[in-house]
Image (cartoon, rainbow, N blue to C red; front, side, top):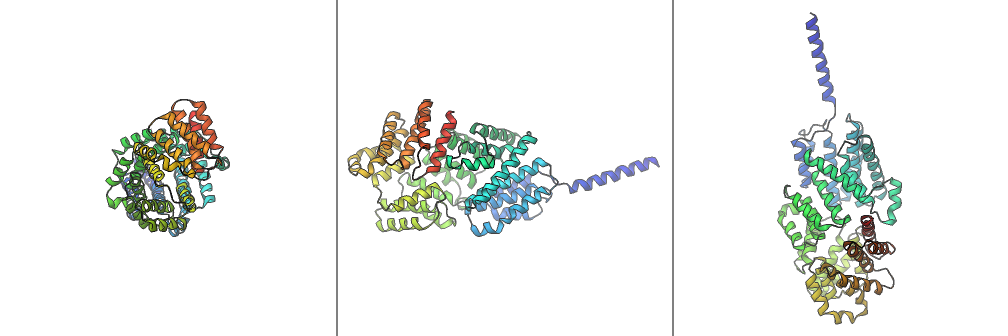
Length: 494
């Protein structure tokens, strides 16, 4: 009898434990989760939504909440749809509350909420809800730093925390007050170390978020460490084992362009099937830029495709600016004027590129065709062709005093690309001398490029001098970008 009671009690306890276990929330990265994540990365938003609305991923598996947010995040960030933004914005707090009220352990609660806050911060910035973006970053940072302190072995924390710590070290001077209020501190080296910690973990344990981390590492190397070639090689080696998708194609092509591999940029984008390319309209824009930097006027069709497919506002002004250049080189004066007017009236000026396009259109000056072509060839890393064009037309260009500053700037960039450092520095300093107002972005960038050259020569005292000179200026274009790059230079040589 006693034996029977013991068996009965044991069975009853087992049953209670089973029922309790069924009520417990959990995190599991199984095949169904990986499949849904891949749908999102492929930008198959509708299919991912169907997967998430079904029962293939149990509701007790709280990773589904983060996947739902990922799906909305990419859709909003890529397409900039204001009505969809207004519709799904309440989901942010609903999802945060679902996680907070779950029975997950605290480190998972902190991590999932932080990721949702960071994704929404980027969306809020796109939609110009800057205060909400500020709040989201602050809350994300608090959650991640709490995890770092209380649960240091929880490796997922270090993906986003590493990115934040790396970026804060290069925040332009005009925005450091925001970083102080948020409580955001960190260094580039610290951030990269943390990101590497997550990458080592992801490569051996769980590859779900590894594509994000690889992309982030590439961008930090290319833009903050100023090692675009290393970043391109790193990404090219990593991407071999990944299935091609629009997002990684975008990252790969941007890094290739930054590293000066313009032909590779075109090949990377072209290798993605047209049906996949259409999911990310910005790829058409990038294709157009790369083609135009070869002076290939087929670029026009890519910019027109971008404007047809994209319903948001970013890079609209620059697309019309580039179309006006195509028209000018095709000697289509009416189209040139038409596209310039559209540049003035369409899109917004959230990006540096759109600000620059608007300011050039407002000048109401016809660009010098020789300087324009040299500019494009230099941007595409075709310095020999640009040098020949500039030297052959030097007298014609310098006959107009208004073109002198730009001529020396373009020549300095050419010699920098050709690694003729003394000639590059000479021409860059001529640019600085020519800019009596100290307002031109060209003179500020000339100082920045001199800093890069001295940095490459290990002459850190001179590099520091030039980087500081950039921060002392407030150029009429690209101010935030130039200041961030100069600050990153000072961080590196420190």
